[in-house]
Image (cartoon, rainbow, N blue to C red):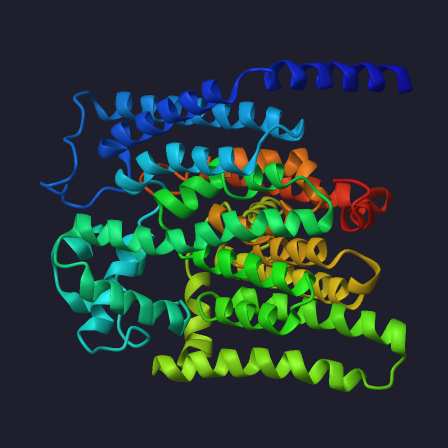
Length: 494
């Protein structure tokens, strides 16, 4: 059994060296071709304004919808291939930080100026900003209060009557952006995208620092955490506010592990006022810090070690919330329930719930589909909660950034609704750890966004629940078998 493995590994290594020998400018140019192709075809099949905006940057190219869709996916495949080619150089240690910035500019610029792709959330952000700008409460009313028009028609129908599910810092930011972006929908999209680039810049600056501190390759970290198709499409083209949360999170974690714990947890707390899952970083960083101090000094003074960083994070979190002026309603059950309302098959709990429902019906058990999915969502959520709790309690035995990254992935996988860009919460941190060599992460970073169509509609429908649920249950079985989950946590298997 050993010889074929060695041969296979040697063949893979030679393939990486062959691909890595191709000059970076070649892969850079190929990526530009892919990005431009996505933007041009995206003018027809992307998440464009509804009705189509008459003053967009370029007219939609001629051709039927099916042809444009096919060319869009071909263009995406070209960009993914270019990213993979750069990755072959990165894993050989040949991706420098200046080149990473160049690639971000070359690949990101077309996506920045083109129509939104894969999601309509940027229109929701604009609508929430206008609601706040007009003196209304985005936590009490939805975009429908703005009245009919191109903006409301561009917001995904499921969110038109829904209040904001985001933190107060982001809501206040959208209010400011709405006040300076004018009445042009194109200008509004660009302004909101530019704001999200702050998060991308933070990732580009702090992710290499974090990788160096952890003894991993900074080039690979940026290749996976900032230049991947998932990162480019989520943060730049779609303009998701996850970019801001992730940027502050990476900055906070990087500073914390470098010894500036108070500053680090404050940044993580601020990130939580954009999206709440970032608060998990405060828990991991504080517990790891206390455990390390107790191991050296004993239990005496442990509470003092906890008090400082917890107080700093708490003051930042509460202070930002109060300063924004919307109170704590955003932490109420109604607001926190909003992201769970849409059930899509990209969510493992939903896919498994549908499988359980159909199997129950097959054997004659009268159950309701909605109730069955609700039960599986609860089971997955509780399982993720216990797994995160275990990671917190054992963080002193493992590397804290890896444990935090895995916990954030667990939060996503166990949540009631999963969209591909949520995976960036944990992936951006794991990119700086030894997990950056994981082929599973590479595959996720390359192809996860393909689960959503260019217009923002989930592509898994109908009988796809069978595939999604089998893949989920297969992954769980692998983790349990021979205790592979321990190897994943410790880094002995990535």
